[in-house]
Length: 414
Ligand SMILES: Nc1nc2c(ncn2[C@@H]2O[C@H](COP(=O)(O)OP(=O)(O)OP(=O)(O)O)[C@@H](O)[C@H]2O)c(=O)[nH]1
Ligand SMILES: [Mg+2]
Image (tube, rainbow, N blue to C red; front, side, top):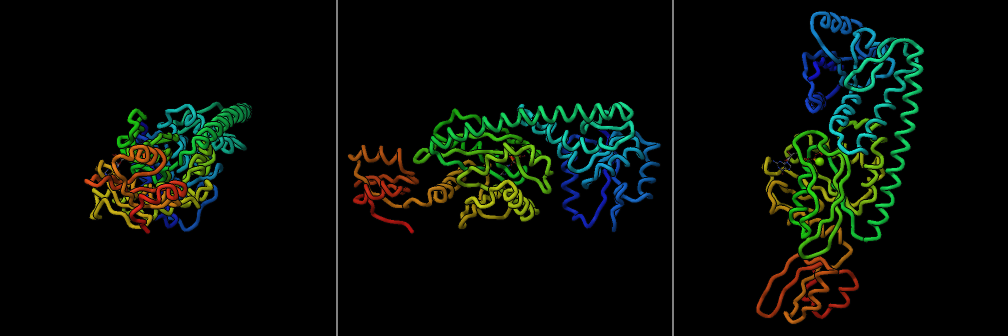
């Protein structure tokens, strides 16, 4: 495990943001040896923090073994270079840390390529104009060779590799485009799970898969750690009495998600843009939920998915005082840990996803098996109640079915 020093260089940084930063460090399996704090009125353009603080850290380093220093802010390439010259060990900023977490978590080849692209693009400007023996390849802090010549070689190699990686990623984008076209032809609506990291998106996906009539669909990874999911998985949810839809689970968002990452994860995040509807998952037990929702909205706008219809799911209500399952307009309160809450989720989702449809109650004689079979296939049956005189169906019908089966409709809901 890497031994690190954390430098909180604060320019009115809220306390919660610093707490989240510690969580990010934990997610990266690093051992914090000590923390230095400096409230800043002005940023030193050469070293971010002041001379006095640099000296204090330098003195500390003479007596303690430390592998890396991590700043809770974004640093410029020049600041990083100067700080590394002073401390003689690698210095990482907030973006490097998030990239390092992603690097650790990346399991699919695409996620690996995306992270490599982001890391190389962040590294390149640091090498321009650098003349020290310190150059870093990744958060693991491998030192590179000395001298201008070596640097020039490094720069060229990095540029060539960026080119190669981006070409691979373009291929992936084209592949995803083809897959998307195939999905669109299937005409199944696509629902995308989005939200802050660790809110419970993958858990909801798995619970819905358990309820799905097609149980063979693969489960996704759900775990209590930041950024458990790094790629997009799309599964088909087949409702026992109704429409099927596609559900996608993707990478979670975080406050100030580095721009390099959004760019690198373009093809992964782009899937969200093509959804028919978003399921925004919020951890209801998190005190910072309002801020997390704002970050989610901001990220959605950034990737061009800000205007899609949305159902907001306040999850983990079992850890709160909120009654659940409970539906209120476009908001739903549930606990994904309670399997029976998925009915409430599906019902809210169906209402919104198939909103252009008519919500009706039908009374159908038992002998009308052909009509029942047609409704099962083409409509969304929310509830079935069997009585002596026939079955009562609470269903969503499209215009065509609505006209065709008028004679069986006994109630039209608002
Ligand atoms: N108590 C409680 N825990 C939950 C609930 N839903 C999910 N969790 C837990 O929250 C943690 C995170 O869940 P995930 O489903 O992996 O979260 P995610 O949103 O997919 O996270 P990322 O992939 O990191 O973005 C896991 O330990 C889950 O077991 C819930 O309703 N109640
Ligand atoms: Mg996940």
